Image (cartoon, helix red, strand yellow):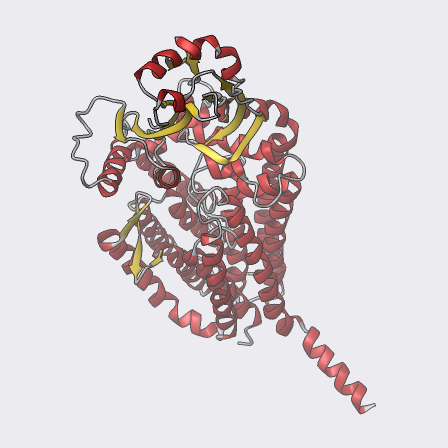
Length: 370
Length: 232
């Protein structure tokens, strides 16, 4: 009887979602990360060292999982206290990277420490989301000055990233801002005004970056006078056509390796479709949607009255789902070409660590007892 | 905020994202399945090229089987042109200066094509092809060269060869011309995929028709009788 009781209590404790979920999620993240490594390898088979980026990503995957588990173990009240300071540090790092950063692929967005490149905008994305949630979650409603303040800090950070220039990264800051103020509840015309400001910022960005203008024109009229600017768009179409229903096998993503820009980062989804076909692409899309739904359900379980935690858990899932959908949208020619990576799967240590950190904080928020 | 209000707001966001995901999946389906045949046809026309593999010309032998005329492949490293885009041009010139520090050409003013290295051995062919893969402007050009042995009298009888427009050796005089049909052989074909720079992707190379090498021709000339050695 005693043994039964111990077993039953152990089982209850083990199957209790609050204990099981971080470990179960870590296991899922490892599997997804390894799938990403395979996809990175497949997209690089035409190079002299096809395993180089895949091994590097694998090397970062396990420390990133440790970061996820550690972040999930830290009490959420710590993040609540640290949020403004972390955000301030992020803004300083964005200014510093613009002034003293290292340029890779015509983007001044990296610090280099002993051969390791660190992209501060990835971590800033995570910090602004937390800061917005803490700011909005602790207030019943947002007055106009408070909303203006949030608008200024969000768009100020966004402009710093646009200067790198990284339009895709800046877009994610806008997404975080819109998500959180929508959850908090603001008048609809404020949200419209924010979209208007985004349109103006985009127009300015496009005016000062000719390549972006040509890409948009090429996207709008791929077979017309701007057909040469629609090169990437056409290559995405050809890459997916090579995939068919079930793909051309791992290691045979020839078209993406030969014709797509950055097949292991910004064009990874198209490369996955070439390797695994529509079936593989559909599973990736469904997987990201399931992730968003999972975070959503997790946020519903948090008791009313603790809006910071609810907002953060939902927004963390939604933000990375939106990032994935932007990446997939660009690769499936639904949106004009923008440099956004596929969370967890694309190559990049900073991106991987920032996703794991954001998810770890979300699990901490979901498990908080305070 | 009440739990219901929060739930409704999250459901609104999720529904929007779900619609986005469905539209994206439909786009993927359209390209990967529905329009596949049409897109594959266009893409193949862009990326795949057919090229001829020249047949190796047969040898001309003397009465005792000693070679009088033999074909050998000769490879030169050529810079076809200089890229138009400033970034690529600077990058190529930097790489050329690193690879050939003794070659003091002013790449911006030279006339092209420019021979960078003549008669390079096979191991260097591989090394240069890898090193300049990003720059299809730098190519290894290989062609067949006819080496003739023996003195002036023998050479006169053997005659001469020249390269035709598909890089095959054809006999233009002497025995080379007389036995041209037998010596020539038949060229083969290959297909290969090019990358966005126009460089060959060697692991996609497929031989569609093997070349048939030319047959050897034995003559009544005897180097031994003439007292000549079989040196070039």
